[in-house]
Amino acid sequence: MEEFTRESIIALLKELNTLLEEHGQEAELYIVGGSAMALTYDIRRTTADIDAAFLPRDVVLEHARTIAARHGLSPNWLSDGVTDLGFDFSADADPRTIEIGPALTVNVASPDYLLAMKVLSSRQSDADRRDAVALCRLMGLTNEAQIQQRVGRYFRVDGRTELFVEDIAAEL
Image 1 (cartoon, rainbow, N blue to C red):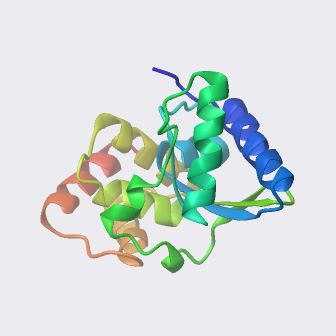
Image 2 (image 1 turned 120 degrees about the vertical axis):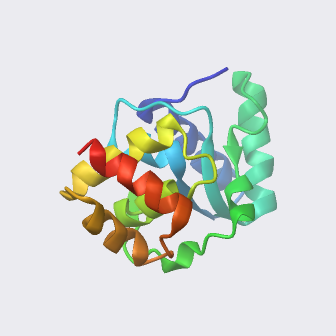
């Protein structure tokens, strides 16, 4: 399985920008998950795919398939499956913009919103915990109450998520 680094993600996004330009098209991506971590918050992080919401969906997927075929990648190297999870990405007031090219606007989830997504993840995996700890350190959060306050900006923290927040805070 391919593992994408910050550099390889940027290279693939630049290739996507080139295809869009060649076809006189424009697109917008909002990147979340491990790929957001690798791109913006932890350059040593790798990820198995790029999770994003994107428009126009059909155009982006068509070009992503072309790129996959060129490089022998999984056809789902760029996945919008995260859009099925019910997150309201428009609630993220401070996404980070990455300059890729004139045909492709790339926004990356803010540390706050990404932390909230990690805490609410149905997996609550070791990788999600490590990412959440890294995000808390990046934002200077040092305890459970601070984490709950940040996550609470977007989602309700209760039950299972409270336990996960405790686990995260224990590592700070």
